Length: 423
Image (cartoon, rainbow, N blue to C red; front, side, top):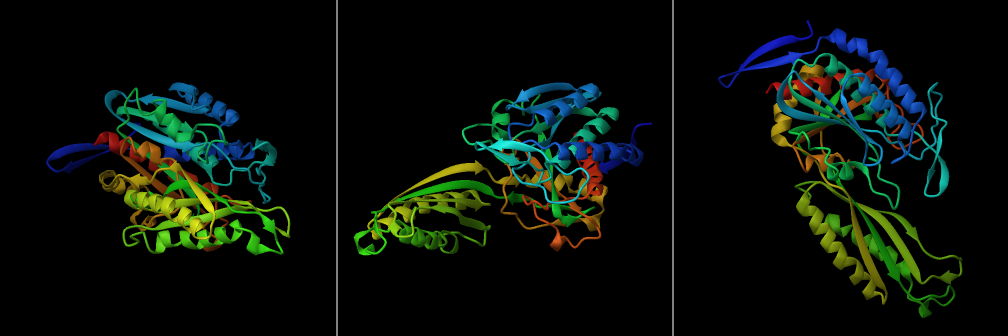
């Protein structure tokens, strides 16, 4: 018998919830760990996930799923149909790694290199996308072997979550544009992210704005060059840049309604000048805006377009601002989150499911959520014998998550799918 079936009487209607027995999950755990180690050892940069995509496609085909490859360059889609018609659930995993050199003694550590911005760079799964792929491969196998449900499941293996290389397109936005949520039309989507700073066995979630919208800005300042010994003959763009950095912080402290949500404006790069004794003519500043509220996002954008040129003008310089959208707000549909919270509690235990504050990191899962209701949550990856506060953070050479955390991810995504389709 494939399912344990529970009958619930809710609101005057009878609902059937299927639950996969633990032995089915235990059977798959060693495979998930093996897949993860292999993918971790062979990481690939954004839009270059050729080996990973081939591995995923072959696995889905072996399970009898309908498989489409080459979506948004290297993306893979698998469609699993249940025994009867019904709603459609999408599950997403991202596949790309980062230009980071791995610094640990894991037997499956990466020694791979790739090309990034014209340079040969080390490549590492420094954000945990290898675990996401392995988890979703496991979910596909479990559900394909326990498919006595009404509806369909669409497995989305997405490239380039970290962002396509400069000059290229891709990622979630391109997958949506190419119809990943259509044919059949998706009713809801679920996704997870491993967390190096959350203990194994824990699940963190937040209704509404969960991760920030990300925008990239570039400020070009035009001054007047002069010898460093005669600054009065210059219009110093470096001084102007300093004043702009200071002024940008007022966009958060004085223009943002922080009782609603958090906001961040950070300058990450300043370039100008070539010699110690020359005041340059130009300075370029590059930074990021992170917002969790659509209205606050627009306020900051519009104020920046006014503030930056005005500061430059006050010093006799000129400045332009170019703001580019990165990701939208990762927004967990509140009704869907409330509906599916009992499922997370069921698989992890009430004491292990935590309501958290919003995170100012960004996720392009947000583009799926703009089209259909979605729920994105965080899965614990810190070994139980490690203080989470000491765990290496994401996007660093020492990043590490424990294999034992992945099975809960398989259980959570599988049960979310079954419970949503049952209701």
